[in-house]
Length: 214
Image (tube, rainbow, N blue to C red; front, side, top):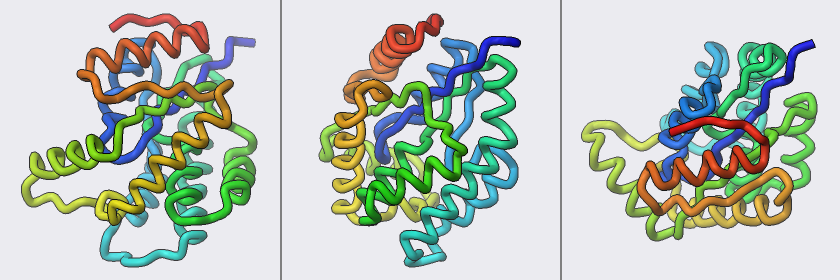
């Protein structure tokens, strides 16, 4: 039997640089790159629904189970086949975001969210979750700058949430990481993209023994 691939999730709130760092890490270690919600054709359709601001207010548990439906499809169609074939996968968001957004952010009980994640993913959790952390005021400035660079593009349903929501999500991420240091590493996301990428790659090498180069 071949060697099982490893699953690495890049986590964090809006504006911390997850997409950039996910792409850089995947290139550095020769991994498949994906994202959540989304990552497969059906999951991408669910993503479109979840991010659509015209939905207005969505019941927290409805949002949770839409996220988990997308994850089930993503795992089945893309992640599990890659891991079984011995390929590493880097994913921009995974279960940590569900705990932080639908748990801490929306106020659902964290244990309920954790159990739902475990059931939906058949017990699959990342081998390592990397939290890119920024002070709230820095993250807010980055979000504003990113939006200014996209004239005519409206923020999605999560990006458009009130600052208090993003504060709860950020604090939720930090608590989740602090309570599971065996599977999480926290990296300061305030440096340049190359500086942060070097730290992310160093953490992946140290924790999982996966080599790569930038």
